[in-house]
Length: 114
Image 1 (cartoon, rainbow, N blue to C red):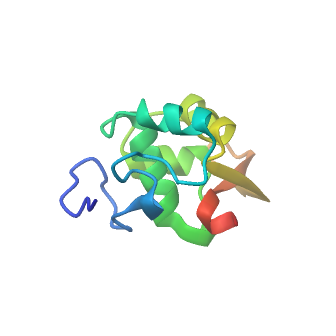
Image 2 (cartoon, rainbow, N blue to C red):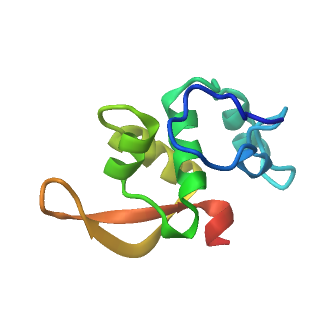
Image 3 (cartoon, rainbow, N blue to C red):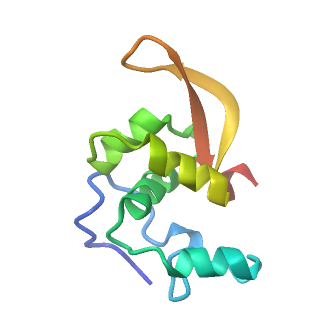
């Protein structure tokens, strides 16, 4: 499934999310619980927009703050936390200084981290 004209994402990037949001919204290797969780994800949801931002960032990854900015939403720490809990993004061990002047963790889309 392609998202070439997706108005939800404001930065250019891959259009397939590595197959995650194709018809079943999950990889064939995912456990049933992950597939059920993915099937419940509304493509217009904040998590979808954030997932697209992380995938588009590639190996450079994003902080939660950067992902929120790319997704065009004011704050995203809770949804990014959900993406980490679900295993869709993974911390890299790197940090970057955020707008508060404090270090923030950098995460990547799990297909990049694999």
